[in-house]
Length: 168
Image (tube, rainbow, N blue to C red; front, side, top):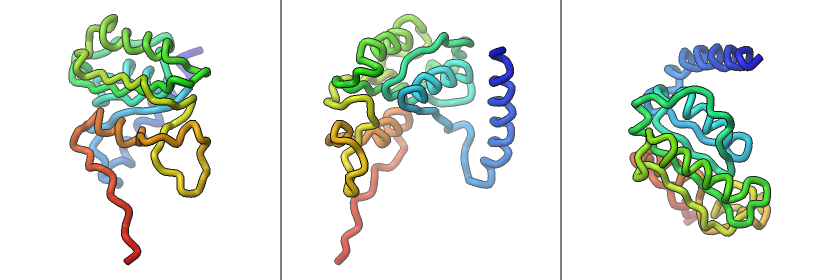
């Protein structure tokens, strides 16, 4: 039963690899990230396809019957994990178990390559330091930019976000 979704995922990856050349994407610089169920999925992909990606960014996720084994290449991976102190959906304890999996149990990724940020005063959300339109909930509006932190944690060559453009 599990093999059917995996087949569709692999077919999708083949088509994506074909299309990626037209978008100037370097498949050898690919990482995966997600929040909540997407965080669990990012963990699965990072483990099952560890030879194909460089790292993972996981927000409020965890391990999910991590099928597959990490490749020896995963020792170069960078993993950036974020858990909010007010998250009652996927608590810090769940993310702590994932941290242990990566840094201790798995023994494939050196501790120095695993960052676990668990001191953010946020709930089950994607923390951000911008929200001029007031779209996000108050629990996500903190002085921290998750996407930038994840990307820089996985690949330090990512440029920092541009400063706002002045209207004068």
